[in-house]
Image (cartoon, rainbow, N blue to C red; front, side):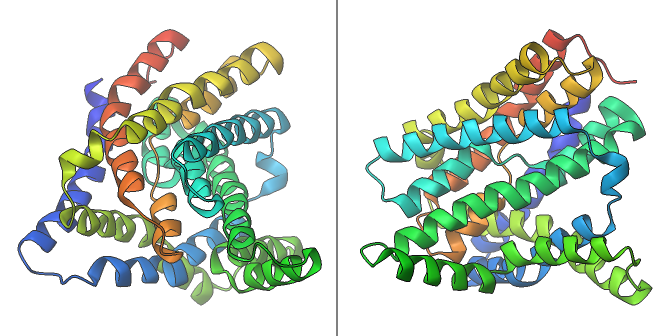
Length: 315
C-alpha cells in the first residue's frame, strides 16, 4: 500500500504545483489554456510518435492482452457515454465523459507502478496499453466530437468534414505517422529521436500542471462531491478493471501474470487525456478535472485491493 502511494504521490505534487502557482499569481488566467495547447500541439504528438515509431511491435504484440485491454476500455467508454447521456449532454460532451471513464494514466502512473510490481517484463505490455489508449480511445472520442460539431448536414458532407478535421488533428495523425515510420524499418535518426523524446517527456507533467491551474479557478469541493464525478470514478476504478478481469481470466484465459497486468492497467486512475480533449475543443472541464483528481486519490486503495484479490505482490 505504501509503495503504491509513493508511486502516485508525484502526480499530486505536480498538480499541486500548478494549483499553487495560480493561487500565488505566478501564472495568469490564460496559463492553463496555453499550456494545454503546448501539450496537444507539441508534447503529446511527439510522445505518441515516439512510442509508436520506436516500439518493436512484432516482439511485444500479445493478441490476448490487446483484446482484453481494448474491449475492456471500450466497454468502460460506453458506460461513460451513458453517464453523459444521463447528464443531458450533447454527443461532444458525452465523448469526454467516455474518456473520463476509460482513459487510464498509462504513461505517467503506469510505467513506474508496473515496473515496481512486475519488473522489466512489464515494459512491452505498458507500451502496448499506452499506445492503444492514445490511439483507440482518443480517436473514438475525437470522431464523436467532430461528428457532433457537424451534425445536421448531409452524410457525405459530414464524413468529408470529419475526415479533414481528423487529418488536421495532431493527436490522431502523430501515432499514424509513427506507425508509418515503424513500417519502414528505419531507426529514427539520433537528433530526431532526442527531439521527440525530450518534447514527449514534457507531455504528462505539463498536462498535470495545467489541471492544477484549472482547478485553482474552481471550487475543489464542488468538483470532487459532484455525483457524476463519483459515478465516473467508480466506473474507472471498479467497473473498468472488473470488465477487463472478466475478459482476461474467464473468457480469454490469459496466462496469470499477463492477465494481472491487463487488469492493473485498467485499474489505473483517469489520465490527463480527457482534460486535453476538453480544453482543445472548449468543452466543460469541471467534471473531467474532478474525475482525474478523485480517481488518482482513491486508486491507491483500489489498486492495492485488486492486487490482493489477484494474489500478486511486488518482486
